[in-house]
Image (cartoon, rainbow, N blue to C red; front, side, top):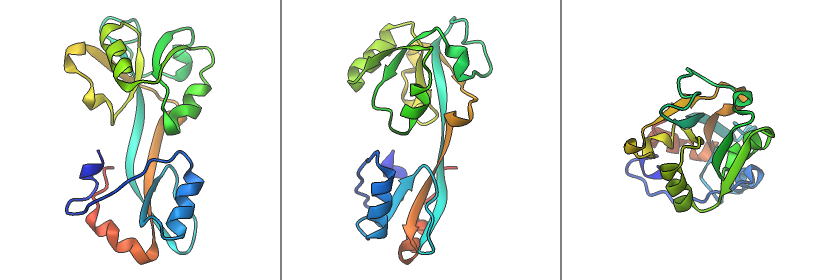
Length: 171
């Protein structure tokens, strides 16, 4: 939720999959801050950890894997899962799961409807699971693969580092 990024500040944002473009726009002054999946290098750049995102698998209660304390991606081999296709930074992780069958959905509302009506597992993160309908009676199990957890960094030019004082990290 971008609205809790910084109280008392108005923030306009743009979501880009191209982190190199974000870095370029920070360096040329187009953006005063960028959020990246890695800290930027450079003597004129300051980066601070802002938030961590962890992948989970959401199962209907009673699914054989719902009782597990944690899972690895290979534990999902052979399963059929629902997958929302606009994954951004997570696309690489899911693309490596070649032994898992995904039913792909591009429409967010249709995906939500399918999750509600289905017994198929799907992915959520610590940031998205709080938005799931509690009436679904689903169990979330964390994925332990190294690639299933990301730290995101807020980066600014040193001339804008005063902005960090107004932003509360979520780590």
